[in-house]
Image (cartoon, rainbow, N blue to C red; front, top):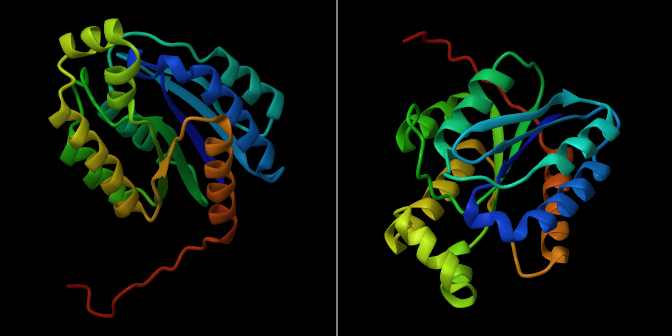
Length: 210
């Protein structure tokens, strides 16, 4: 497998960044030695922290560099990862994306275009979903005000969750809910690692070319 860790480091998820780093590191350590891992973070921009590599120490260092910024270009980052980083890689491929699903700054790709491309990409996508709306509303009033100024309404959060569910459905993956403890993410990663190790590809070419 080639696995890309796609980390949302926008303001809405920065309060969980250390938890994300720890759980991502734990996930990488569970993979087989022949599996390669790349790390990409995104806020308003996309930053490749490391291309797919079998060097685990390089991957751990890349995870440690993930830090938060402004804006959320989720659609652009999904398209970039599938089109630019995985499109020419042979073999089995997967993307694990940490995010609340809300996009605020993409200017190239969109909701429907990324879903269509994901369905054609032969890449399994596993979203790790963060319900950052409830967190901001309940625990951090100043940040909640800031997020609202960025246009993150309840309707947009609902659309974001729907997007992640469809990404998983279209590609054969599964959405995992990030809970309030690191253990919840570790359990999610164990589930993903187990699923990756048991999946196979089935191809079919119809006799009628039409």
